[in-house]
Image (cartoon, rainbow, N blue to C red; front, side, top):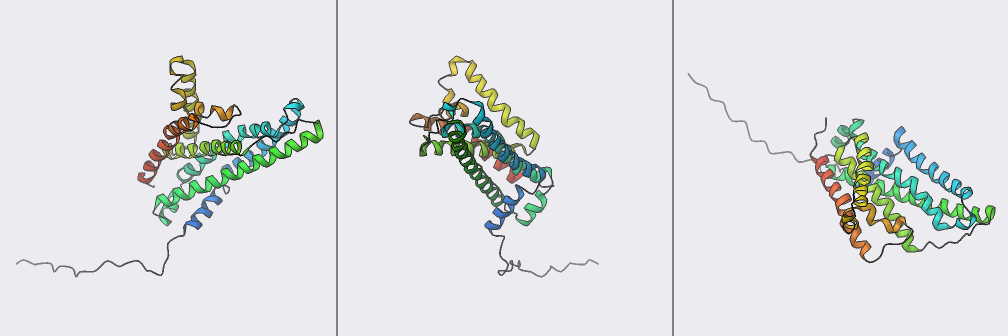
Length: 266
């Protein structure tokens, strides 16, 4: 005697309740902005950016000859601490999801990881622009104090092109750190690689004379050298930046994004 199993009745897929809306992107953005400051590492890193920016201006105010106390020089002084710390902020924004095991909650509430990454990047750009605004404001205060306290030169020869390049350099470093964080998803490894690899690459092009012509195309630091030297980007500088920026920023962003979208959340 044999038995047969009756086929299960067909049950159409139940569609989600149309009255339940997804999480709006603006809420993701607010959450990612809050994540930048709600951990001790993030809070103190942002605090260090502000403190060191002010400290750099204060030190420069009394350490150089009054003739060098100009707005341009004060802005250049603030670029050093921020140029070192903003990329670290970008790295922490990505790696914290994995090192602190919050990724499971984040990607369960929002399965579309691309939306989370977009919110993180936009939050970082907002923080980067705020840091740049702080630099410009503190540099202006330093210039005024230089005139009042040390009879400094006090010139304000920092044109719109200079502001544009200053913002560009800071945001490039921030996005590059973000990309390295996505690639490695480990805070310590990403920080070490971010600082060591470009420096080693730059040293290679500096020591090997035959690579001098290729350096602006393949080395991001060389492409940005006019800005570091107090000039503005013009002419071929933009071509150099486009190529080297693609190699050192856009390609790591793309590869890091692929890894983040495919990595298993445990």
